[in-house]
Length: 116
Image (cartoon, rainbow, N blue to C red; front, side, top):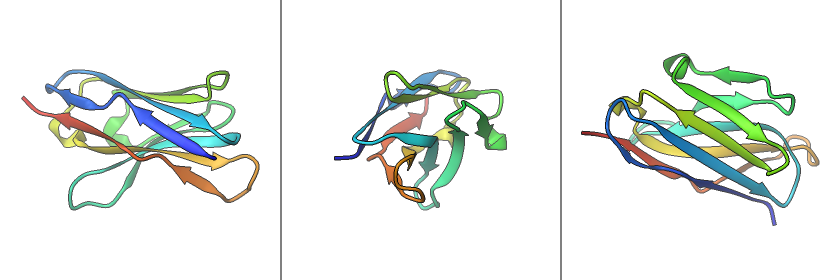
């Protein structure tokens, strides 16, 4: 069974930090990404990382967020620093299957709330 399990969300004050983790199992993944969805809004890409660890970020998080992956642990991370209230959202992990080309999998999401 293919699974992506996120963890690390929570409540943090503005300017604080959180690290999200996404543990993958059941298949091999090539590209991995983090998305977020705020209430009443669409799910948007935050950051992505290729199998070769090339990264890409949406402009609003550049310089504050860092995506990384540990292939041995089959885990992808999102280090979030200098958090702002507008970063509040449910964060989802997405993995592209390296076995079934064109097939992607999603985690269940983890809530991040930035508030004083």
